[in-house]
Length: 144
Image (cartoon, rainbow, N blue to C red; front, top):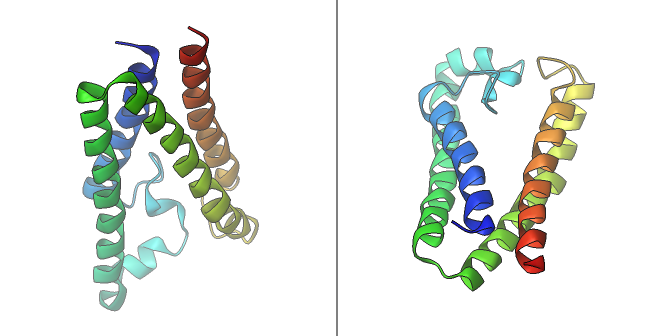
């Protein structure tokens, strides 16, 4: 395995863990589950919102599943040029997640609508570690 295959595989493994959480236990507060939102339990128990929450949670998991399936295909069958561009695409898409969703999460955290308090920082460090891992993998590949 080359360095690109390794870093993409690590990213995919972590995404698979999150998909499992979203499918099986979406209310978890770990593993990027939606249980971090203080209103989650109340809304999930309300029949008017339960189906919407399940739909949106499964929609997110299904979208992640598409990325994982493509990533696995690229790791196994893609040449190094395709793997390089896939790693760059993962960096970009993860960055887009950060700049579009993190400000919302930070605001909710500041308003006390996320438990545990300060989770937005944890998520920011997690996203940063994804981006840096992929970027380091790309740089090592380009240097070799």
